[in-house]
Amino acid sequence: MEESSEETRPPQAGEAQGEPPRPDDEMTRSRTEVEEAKAQAERNLDLAKRIQADFDNYKKRSQRDRDEQIKAANDRLLYELLGFLDDFERALASKAGPEEFRRGVESVHANLRSLLQSKGLVETPCENFDPALHEALCVDEGEEGKVLEVYQKGYCLGPRVIRYAKVKVGSGEKRGE
Image 1 (spheres, helix red, strand yellow):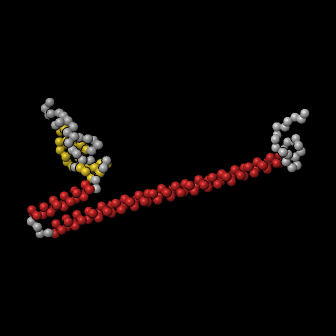
Image 2 (tube, one colour; image 1 turned 180 degrees about the vertical axis):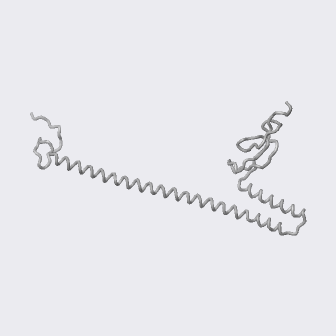
Image 3 (cartoon, helix red, strand yellow; image 1 turned 90 degrees about the vertical axis):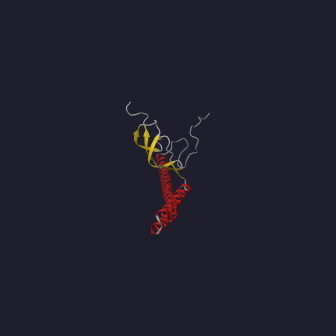
């Protein structure tokens, strides 16, 4: 009975059956495999570079689009505010008496407040001190945590604070105690 051979491939040209493969054939095969691996690595590197360049271009395009949207929104708001500038210029140029002038300015003020509210701007409530909404400029005797005086109003646009209210806060202590 013949011994079973561990090698299952048929003999190559120039090989006798049962002879080990020649070093030249193995070397050639190894070189071919290395060259194929290098070529595949170069293709993968080129693909990675293309993907990175596409992603960089996408980020730049997205930023440009976002900047354009912000500019367009600012343009619309400034256009709406120009009407108030016109109103103030007309008021300053008018020969109206003090009471008529005051009513005109109050009307412009009401219109401006209405425009800002329509854009989502709301005044910060100022009953109780909240460090997320208020900036305490000083503390005085009075009920603890209560806003005693508002020096400058604060405003929120949706959940974001646009300007913190500057306030005087009660300390809960009475002088002389």
